[in-house]
Image (tube, rainbow, N blue to C red):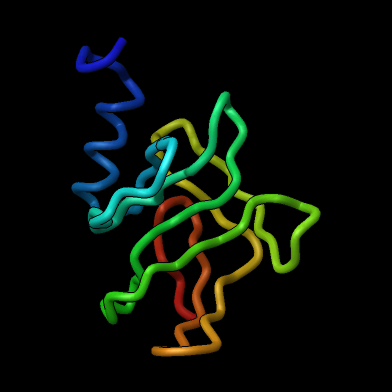
Length: 110
Protein backbone atom coordinates (compact mmCIF):
# COMPACT_ATOMS: atom_id res chain seq x y z
CA UNK A 1 0.00 0.00 0.00
CA UNK A 2 1.84 3.03 -1.31
CA UNK A 3 1.59 6.22 0.73
CA UNK A 4 -0.35 4.56 3.56
CA UNK A 5 0.76 3.80 7.08
CA UNK A 6 3.04 0.85 7.60
CA UNK A 7 4.99 -0.16 10.66
CA UNK A 8 8.11 -0.66 8.54
CA UNK A 9 7.86 2.87 7.11
CA UNK A 10 7.29 4.34 10.58
CA UNK A 11 10.32 2.43 11.93
CA UNK A 12 12.38 3.62 8.95
CA UNK A 13 11.48 7.24 9.72
CA UNK A 14 12.48 6.72 13.36
CA UNK A 15 15.73 4.99 12.35
CA UNK A 16 16.66 7.87 10.04
CA UNK A 17 15.82 10.35 12.80
CA UNK A 18 18.33 8.51 15.03
CA UNK A 19 21.00 8.81 12.31
CA UNK A 20 20.75 5.34 10.77
CA UNK A 21 20.90 4.42 7.09
CA UNK A 22 17.59 2.99 5.85
CA UNK A 23 16.79 0.76 2.87
CA UNK A 24 14.73 1.80 -0.17
CA UNK A 25 13.92 -0.60 -3.04
CA UNK A 26 14.27 0.95 -6.52
CA UNK A 27 14.38 -0.22 -10.15
CA UNK A 28 17.17 2.26 -10.94
CA UNK A 29 19.34 4.41 -8.69
CA UNK A 30 18.20 8.04 -8.45
CA UNK A 31 20.25 10.87 -9.98
CA UNK A 32 20.63 12.49 -6.54
CA UNK A 33 21.15 10.24 -3.53
CA UNK A 34 19.36 11.09 -0.32
CA UNK A 35 21.58 11.11 2.77
CA UNK A 36 21.53 8.04 5.00
CA UNK A 37 19.68 5.99 2.38
CA UNK A 38 20.77 2.65 0.91
CA UNK A 39 19.10 2.09 -2.46
CA UNK A 40 18.63 -1.58 -3.34
CA UNK A 41 18.57 -1.76 -7.13
CA UNK A 42 16.82 -4.67 -8.85
CA UNK A 43 13.51 -6.12 -10.00
CA UNK A 44 11.02 -8.70 -8.84
CA UNK A 45 12.54 -8.96 -5.37
CA UNK A 46 16.05 -9.67 -6.72
CA UNK A 47 18.64 -7.08 -5.78
CA UNK A 48 21.67 -6.58 -8.01
CA UNK A 49 23.52 -3.91 -6.09
CA UNK A 50 23.27 -1.40 -3.25
CA UNK A 51 23.98 2.28 -3.89
CA UNK A 52 24.56 4.96 -1.26
CA UNK A 53 26.52 8.15 -0.70
CA UNK A 54 29.95 7.67 0.85
CA UNK A 55 29.45 8.28 4.58
CA UNK A 56 32.62 10.39 4.88
CA UNK A 57 30.86 13.21 3.04
CA UNK A 58 33.24 13.31 0.07
CA UNK A 59 30.29 13.13 -2.36
CA UNK A 60 31.31 9.84 -3.98
CA UNK A 61 28.74 7.16 -4.78
CA UNK A 62 29.37 3.70 -3.31
CA UNK A 63 28.16 0.78 -5.47
CA UNK A 64 28.18 -2.58 -3.68
CA UNK A 65 27.48 -5.56 -5.94
CA UNK A 66 25.07 -8.05 -4.36
CA UNK A 67 25.56 -10.76 -7.03
CA UNK A 68 27.56 -13.63 -5.54
CA UNK A 69 29.18 -14.63 -8.86
CA UNK A 70 30.84 -11.21 -9.34
CA UNK A 71 33.91 -10.18 -7.35
CA UNK A 72 34.04 -8.25 -5.17
CA UNK A 73 30.53 -8.79 -3.83
CA UNK A 74 28.66 -8.10 -0.62
CA UNK A 75 25.66 -9.56 1.13
CA UNK A 76 22.98 -7.32 2.57
CA UNK A 77 20.57 -8.06 5.38
CA UNK A 78 17.43 -5.96 5.77
CA UNK A 79 16.28 -5.62 9.37
CA UNK A 80 12.70 -5.29 10.65
CA UNK A 81 13.16 -1.55 11.30
CA UNK A 82 14.20 -0.70 7.73
CA UNK A 83 17.94 -0.59 8.42
CA UNK A 84 20.60 -2.72 6.73
CA UNK A 85 23.77 -4.64 7.43
CA UNK A 86 26.34 -4.98 4.64
CA UNK A 87 29.01 -7.68 4.76
CA UNK A 88 32.01 -7.55 4.39
CA UNK A 89 33.29 -4.03 5.06
CA UNK A 90 33.53 -1.40 2.32
CA UNK A 91 37.06 -0.20 1.61
CA UNK A 92 37.29 2.47 -1.05
CA UNK A 93 40.62 2.19 -2.85
CA UNK A 94 40.28 5.53 -4.68
CA UNK A 95 39.22 9.01 -3.66
CA UNK A 96 38.74 9.36 0.10
CA UNK A 97 39.93 5.76 0.75
CA UNK A 98 37.28 5.31 3.47
CA UNK A 99 37.03 1.92 5.19
CA UNK A 100 33.87 1.16 7.13
CA UNK A 101 31.20 -1.35 8.10
CA UNK A 102 27.47 -0.76 7.71
CA UNK A 103 25.85 -2.51 10.68
CA UNK A 104 22.11 -2.16 11.45
CA UNK A 105 22.09 1.16 9.64
CA UNK A 106 25.08 2.62 11.46
CA UNK A 107 28.52 3.33 10.05
CA UNK A 108 31.38 1.75 12.00
CA UNK A 109 34.73 3.19 10.88
CA UNK A 110 37.75 0.91 10.61
